[in-house]
Length: 342
Image (cartoon, rainbow, N blue to C red; front, side, top):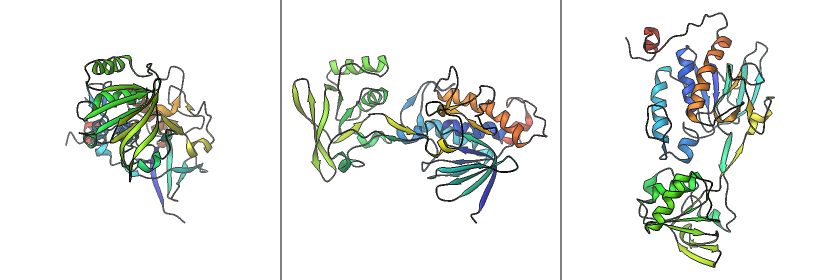
């Protein structure tokens, strides 16, 4: 019989919204255990774009994705959450007393009185472009995310794609790379218009190159790129490159969550907007994984959802306890929990 870890609330997903949920639940004296498929907290922010600037977090005119995660980890430290990384919650069952038993893909067992799904879009993986032999270069010269900008300093970088990620990294890497070339199959983009205009302005100044077409072949040896063949309207062009960043989007899958008996809507989890509870009482969904009328897929929206969810979860975990709403600015008891008042 596997050892069972017990907690008040099990949070599936340790991205920014899951981390902030720890804070809101901690203010209500609820202990949390988080399980995430990645090897560290942060979700997509740390996995895909840790150094990418974010501009719509309240009170932060600009903050990198990794810095946001670091600040959230600092904020929840007083509540001592427990983490299990590199794991998937493969099964979830309701126990006779109404609580839940979860089992990971490695056989760990966790029991909680409430479950919060904060899994973003579910488990995700970048889409691999149809370029022959690209697998031989992955992890050495071909990357699907920028984890350290310094790794691209002084390199000849070829970026492929027409969305926000492709344009953002074209602009962010241009100042430090030796050469940046953006390739897209057409001159129209799905990215923010301001980013597109800035890219074309840099092209006019000969600070980067834009090529219409598609990458058809890679050149190199032992995983080290030397160039790529791009087929465009006027034929094939050879572009020197030592790094390739293909941004063809992500494949999102709910994974085992789809088998938990929850009502689903186009691979998302419908919730109410009072408690952000799913079709199963005691199971909540916050962040990008949920669905409701007017939903905006913003981190700050997930923070709001976490706050309301915590109030409802408290009533489940401690049904006989009266909840007194308090402000952190004036409540001495909350300030003691946060360690800012002795």
